Amino acid sequence: MTVRTRFAPSPTGFLHVGGIRTALFAWLVARQANGQFVLRLEDTDQKREVEGSAEHLRESLLALGLAYDEGPDIGGPYAPYRQSDRLESYRMWAQKLIDGGRAYADPYTPEELQAFRDEAKAKKRPFLYRNHRPKNPPAWDGTQALRFKSEPKDYTWHDEVMGELSTGPEVIDDIIIIKADGFPTYNFAHIVDDAEMKITHIIRGQEFIASQPNYLNIYEALGLTPPVFATMPHILAPSGGKKLSKRDGAKDVLDYLADGILVEALVNFIASLGWNDGTEQEVFSVDELIDKFSLSRVQRSGARFDEQRLVWLNGQWLRRLSLDDLYARSANFWPAEAAAASDDYKKQILSLVQDRIKTLADLRDMTSYFFTEPTPNESLISGNKQLKKLTPQERTDLLQAVHGSLEQSDFSPESLQTTLNTLLETTGQKPAILFGLIRVVITWAPFSPGLAETMALLGKDRTLARIQAAL
RNA sequence: GGUCCCAUCGUCUAGCGGUUAGGACACCGGGUUUUCAUCCCGGCAACAGGGGUUCGAUUCCCCUUGGGAUCACCA
Image 1 (tube, rainbow, N blue to C red):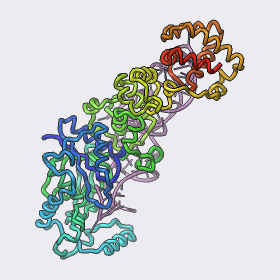
Image 2: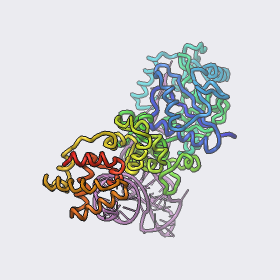
Image 3: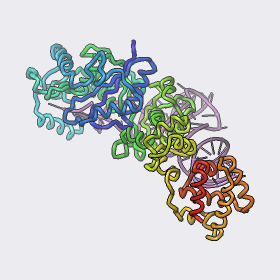
Image 4: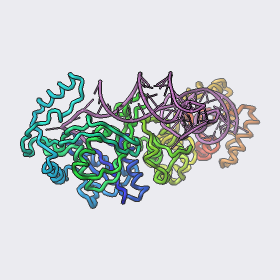
């Protein structure tokens, strides 16, 4: 049987890291089995729908490389893939339940229902609708909610992540399957869709684990064989033990990319949040993930979102990139002054900073002196515990000597290094002072790449001019 | 409150009866003859508590504690 997994978000907002992990794992399961990955939009709650979020979801998945084989925009053998376009299916399956005496119209008003709930709460008992199941419900005319007539019983089932799970009959209830507005509830629609779309693995968050027995009851009533279930624990906020939410900084995945995080790093990070292959490997390519991922090794408890680890992984991936690849990805991250610079010049800069940037966005603050004349910042000298010891006269003498020697250099990195080493002897200064001073006056930046390489790239004219200006 | 799930360094985790409890991030030192990084070396740091089972428990069972999920005409 072909493995088919799906990602079924509701178009109610952006895709954050919690959601993307579910999507990633579903995608990995499909890919490693040479199966299909399906995108389905669960838009049965018209009130909550957010304009443009379907498109945003699509972009986010594609930006992360999680291409889907079937979906609302590309169609597929089980189209449509948008629940609001599938109302007839739900009607048909619901009718089967009605005909079999397993669904009935809910005669109560919202007020009456609320009264039942309040009563249960007052008694500190869980609310069960079936305790109030009407003896002779009216015929369902489509204007009332349609409820599933449950058959409470024990359940034990297997979950690929959680292992064996079991519950008693007290959690089974008569849940609503079609709302009074004619739309199905998630609880019903996803079962119908997964069956019709031949989904083999349902991978979703732990918020659904409590209703799982109710789903099993419906599968039985519908005569369907349940697919494989895999429940993912939540990703937790960095600070507390709470589920990661927007106010804890759960960013849109596209924001991470815009902030200079590489796709490889983001995918690697999200995958390793709650999963590992049992070895000491930390850095995984997508291909390695496809090869090695397994639901059974997913952690059962929630994992905190640790951004420092994401940044570290980003550095790992940044350093593995070829220069051309790095250059291609850096396009949107150069400082404004770089607009007129040549490809070749920018590539040379990248080769100097590749080992010291943490995100692509670092390029904006770390490379501007390669494109424009830096503004002298005296605090870089007064704040340096070596350089601040120099008197103004000593400083000038030193720079004068440097300037003199460099005028003789052809400015290749090798000869510059030789010249610098010779200066160390002729001036009798420590490297920390001599090189530190040169570095500061030619970049006026808190840090910079290797001195000889930096000077070589800046060229003789600019380097000498900046030293001259600091005299 | 009912039900269900979970529990190893600050964080992510390895471990599936016998280990000096391993790795990674972060942090703190040292090195790589300038800074900041990279890289390398070293250090700090954990089995929530209590009962069992066993020759022997981090590991298996029970209880306690703690955390999480859920109890919608949301998904």
